Structure formats: C-alpha cells, structure tokens
Amino acid sequence: MTVERIVSVIDSFPLPVMLIGPDERVRAANAGVDSILGVDLVGKHYITALRQPAIINAIAETRASGTPQEIRFTGRAGPRDTVFRVAVAAADGDILLTFMDQTAAEEVGQMRRDFVANVSHELRTPLTALLGFIETLGGAARNDAAARDRFLGIMAHEANRMTRLVDDLLSLSRVEEDERVRPREQVDLAALLASVIKGLEPQAKDAGVDVVLEVESALDLVPGDAGQLVQVFTNLVENGIKYGASGGTVTVTLAARQMHQRLRGEAVRISVSDKGDGIAEHHIARLTERFYRVDSHRSREVGGTGLGLAIVKHIINRHRGRLLIESEVGVGTKVSVFLPCQ
Ligand SMILES: Nc1ncnc2c1ncn2[C@@H]1O[C@H](COP(=O)(O)OP(=O)(O)OP(=O)(O)O)[C@@H](O)[C@H]1O
Ligand SMILES: [Mg+2]
Image 1: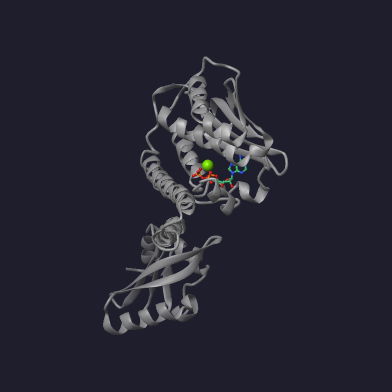
Image 2: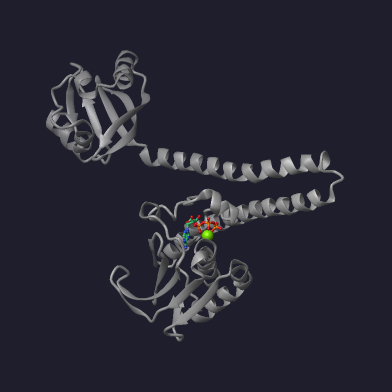
C-alpha cells in the first residue's frame, strides 16, 4: 500500500490512529491524533512525537517481540485532560497505535467511588451515635430512667435518619431508572399542591411557619407523574419550612401557563418562596448535587440527607421541565419549577 493510500484509510478511521514505520518515524497519523499530540508529526521520530516513557517502552517491546500491548496514556483532547488506552500492534513491519478514550469510563468510576464514600460517611455518623448510646444504656445509665428516656429519643432520631437516607437512595435510583420514559398521566397541580401542603402541616406548625398556596389558574392539567411530583413539591416546601423558618411564611404559587423560551412551548410555573436566610450565590449551582448541603451540620440536625434536590432535579428532567433556584442572603429563596403543558 502506498503511503497516500494508508493515510486515506487511516483518515477515515473513527478512532485516533498512528502508524510508525520500520525507520522508527511516524509514517501516518489521522486528524484524531493531531488533536491529541499536535499537527505535523509525519516524519518525526516516534520518541519525539509521543514523549511518554510507558508508550515508548511498549512500542520498543512490540517491535522486538511482535506481541501486542495495551497501555495507559494521558493527553489532551481539546481543552480537557483525557485518558486513553492505547493498543500497540505490529503490522507488517510497521507499528500501529490506536487511541481509545477512557475518560468517560474513568469519570463514572470516580463518581461511583465518591458516591460509596458519601453513603458510608452518612451512615457511619448515626451508627456511631447509636453504638455509643447502646453501650451507655448497657452500662453507666442502666438504672437512670431519665437518661434512658433521653437516650432512646436520640436513638430513635438517628435511626429515623438512616431510614430516610435509605429511602432517598432507593428513590433516587428508581427515578434515574425511568428518567427516559416521559410521564403521560394528566395531573391537577392545584389539588396536588394543596395535598402536599396538608401533609406538611404538622411540620410547618412545629416550625412556626405558615404555608400559603396561591393559585392563579386552577384548571390547568399537565402531563406528569403525580407520585413523583408530590415528591418534588414535598421536598421544596419542606426545605422552605426547614431552612426558611426564620421568615415565618412559605408561599407556594401556581402561575397560569405561559410561553417558555427554553422549553419551546407553554409551561406552568410552580414557585416555592421563603423569606429565610437565603443561600450564598456560589452554593446555588451545586445544590442539586447528591449530598450537597450548604451547612451540613444544620441540615443533619433537621434530618436532611442532601439528596432531596438531586431527586427533584432528576424528576424534573424526566418531565422535560426546568428548575430555577433564586436566592439572596438575608432576603430569602425562591425555587421555581417549570413544567411543559404538552
Ligand atoms: N429554601 C432554602 N433556604 C436555604 N437553604 C436551602 C433551601 N433549600 C435548600 N437549601 C440548602 O440546600 C441543601 C440541599 O437541599 P436538599 O433538599 O437537597 O437536601 P436536604 O433538605 O438537606 O435533605 P433532604 O431533602 O434529603 O431531606 C440543604 O441542605 C440546604 O443547605
Ligand atoms: Mg430537602
């Protein structure tokens, strides 16, 4: 095969590919390789072109033995660091390098490790507390009725927190599972919001918060999954009660349908506003990350796992809607959900 022909074959290959000739110089490299290693490699010695010892050694070994190898290679594809698995193979006196992008797989691995670390940490704290109290109740506090009642109260609180965490985790994985299936049932949002607020009445009362529902247009039905939407608004109103209690009022507004530019159609807006402490701007973009809490100590005290808004976000994605969090420190927070009407 002529060099021109090799180049044209390599150019149409979907992965970055490089061919090194018997003279140890680069014989051909396609555009994918250009974006990893730079342009004008043809004719250069492969050591100059590649520069990383692992790959240089692998090439030398394959040249000597003919055995194919696979090694890890870090480079840049565009603006970001990229990890490649490079297959080094002998091909009729030449050496063929094929670069396979592993970045996405490595990121998934990292996310999984972070997730497991977070879950373990969240479970360890209440478990440590429980074990401590069990020991105290079995020993020092065995005959102290007052201490026993107090400790049992705290133990129930910690056990409830673990139950919530496990429920939230299960709910998150269920939501992720059916994220691609668009809900079709028609939901009466005014009635749904009223029932969510009713369910949270005891919690609101304990916190000294009034929850007010303002409905601008009661007749709207939107396609949705009623159970999941209850979860969304329960978390948003509960957050208003838990973190915005100092404002005394949480207002839930169901606005009439309106054109929504980004959703390319009509959407209804449901907003949950409080006049509490608000959230500093740099936290806002991260609130929907799993386990992200502005003040983790305070959130834990009120029983939060930091998974609520992550679940909300997934459910809204499934509904092809949008979530908007606006907040100002000292003024309050307004979380709006836009749901498409068709
Ligand atoms: N209305 C609000 N005002 C101030 N901070 C808020 C408000 N809503 C949410 N936050 C902050 O965002 C964090 C994440 O909220 P999210 O609902 O995801 O978790 P959580 O309420 O802590 O736990 P969970 O919802 O699982 O019980 C909260 O811990 C809190 O710090
Ligand atoms: Mg919450």
